[in-house]
Amino acid sequence: MPKIFVFLMVFVFCFTLWPQEAPEEEAKTDKATEETVAIENGQKEESAEPATETEQTEKPSETQAEETEQTEEPAENAEESKETPSENTETPEKEDELQDGQEFIAEEEPVTDAPLVKIQQGKPVKYFELYGYFNVANTFSYNMKLSGNNPYMTSRNTINKVVTDETTGEKVTRSTNEHVLNWAWLKLHLEPVINIAETMEIHTKLSIFGNTAMGADNYEFDKKENGLLRDAQLSTSANIVFEGLWGVFDTPIGQLKVGRMPFNWGLGILYSDGNKFNSLSSGNYLDRIQLTIPIMGFKLIPAFDLASTGLLDKYHDYFIDASQKDDGFNVSLMFTMQEDDPAVLENKILNEKTVVEVGAMVMFSWKNTVSGEWTKSEENDGYVEPTDDHFVDPDTVYAYTGQGAKLWKLDAWLNLYYKIFALKTELAFLTGTIGKVRLDDGREKSVKTQMVGWAVDLGFRVIPKKFHIGLLTGIASPDDAEKVQGDSWSVPGNSINNSSTRSDRTVENFRFNKDYNFNSALWNQFLGRFTAGYYASLTGTYFFLDDLKGYLGLTYTMALKEKNSLGGKGLPNALEPFIGIDYANKSGMRTGLRYQFGVPFSGLDTDEHDASFFHYLNVYLGVVF
Image (cartoon, rainbow, N blue to C red; front, side, top):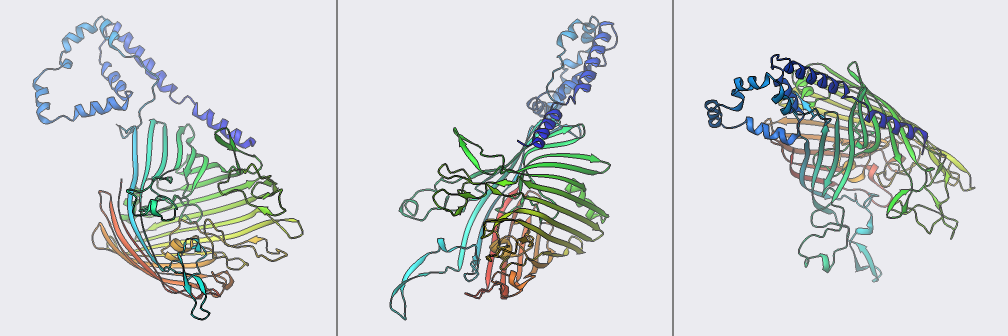
């Protein structure tokens, strides 16, 4: 285990055990002692009431709930309580008893070490809080395969049929080439928060049916057993997916977070948590130790990430890290100055106050000089990848090849709100090495990377609360290789030429985060991560009511180099008009629809096919809580 990781764990342990409440407990003990002495000396008993209030704040949340219910009785009961004397009205008798001090001391509860219940604005917060959203939607697409040019719509799930060739008369198998693909899905996204104490919280995120299409629960071919004859959907897939789990601890110098937590930075072109209503994505999560230190209005945030453990090994009935030599790590330092409360920020914007928010991040990622990403089988001399589930195959001997990855990520963002204008921008730059490639002569050479991505979000409230105009634009650096725009999360684009000499060993095309949405069905729904190109999206939004708005817009995308396009035959990708309507009330209800179609250009054409029109329609209904 690396020394830096051991040091960080000791650091976390020390801050967890820091005696933050000791001064308050000592003060309470001294106060109770003074009250007891005062009572024994026959002094006034006015301090008994504050002591009772302190005891009430230290009671469990269930007791507080009962007391709250008692204080919120109907008016009839309140009037009866005024007419009927209570125990507290027996002041003379109590005073006679307190002269000796014996009775009061016997009833006094001892000071316990139980943590204080979290308090906000003088009111106790619930021990358990629950946030999230429910969403059910239907997606309709036409020509999602882009006339056969979409590299991610593979033919293995395409329905084929045997027909007779009109020319030769022979039986041939041809694809039915379904143009219409339509499916429905539902999702319940939950974000529970457990308030352990005033200084400790536990957060988690999970999705129910987040990756399940309605009508099926797995990737099975339709057959008699699971077709029309079955009575209900099968439960053979992971319908409950836990995405994050982390703890939050208040320390003397700042807020400490430990665990697997979502990470969103700036506009989200580099890191995005994907936590959006009507989205199937889970976003970016990092296994991180993070400390947020507030300093004079801004925040300094150092963090350490266990980016990857590499291969896993089956040990007894659980899995362990098979090797420390293939682990990957991140260490970062972030600086932010922003408004933490969205309601306060929205109020400032509506009042046309000038607001400036900034953020900067430096992240260094590295892996050791050896890596377990490639294996060499004893049966042949060819190199094979590890098994799909990333577990070690006991029948395979793993040969570690040189990796030595060292990558720097520099990112800065700016949000400016001035009167009726809004400007948001983010600039990201990546440089370093991301591994090695084996040449035909057996030598290993480092694969370098230098890439830049930039995005801008402009807003103009022409008529506040009535008509707004927005512009999204951005650029991703190109590469010298061919067809690099064919890129997705699971199938990275070919950024290194497949020549025998492999002289191109530099990856230069910046990949936008898969969850960064810029109003393009072509990229956000069909192809995946935007890369090696330029985009611009203009939108006009009209508010019919405070809860009801309609919008109309146009998106244009293109490659920066002709050979970078999907088929390597042109620069422009497509022109995509879109229209939609959204309804969102204060109770949390959300519903709407969005339609977008695309006019393809030469950038989507290949030698085999010329792409034709494509369509996308989404209808959704849900609630946010």
